Image 1: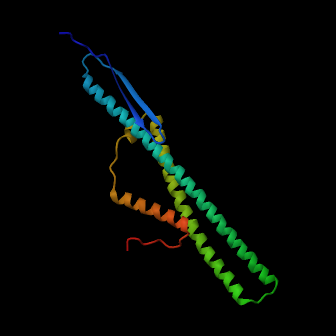
Image 2: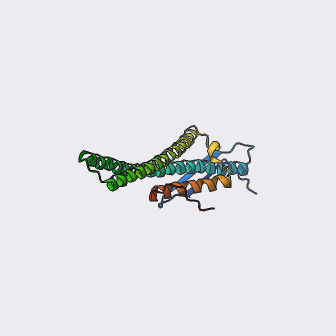
Length: 194
């Protein structure tokens, strides 16, 4: 019987990413004389998974930051349009005052539109603040993962973490409310549960 001595092992895995992209992660290790090659292979397997999980977490936070950046830009454009409307109402009111027009109905209408526009602007500003806060939180998490990856600390972010169902539900609900409020310019929080 021939005795085979394993001196080197390797583990490689191809991970599918979106848009037909993929990435291969591979580790090789030399086996010492009394080291169990099966245990070493298991360590390589989990090392590859830790690295990929860290990379996946980085990509997830990067995508979140990019999505929030897009929502922030959209909200800024909406806010700009409402400020333009507000300034146009101010000009119309000043024109009426300059002409000494005493058309009470037009003045009341402009003042009502002005008041409503101010209320919408305040809601949009609050939505923008929430988006920026979420974006900054995501950026902070992204930078933490990046630092851990650059330091080779894959165990910190590469292991699956426990999840809280209530946090996930609240996160989904808040994200949906922000999206709907910015899309339809709704001033109130829709109460879909009550």
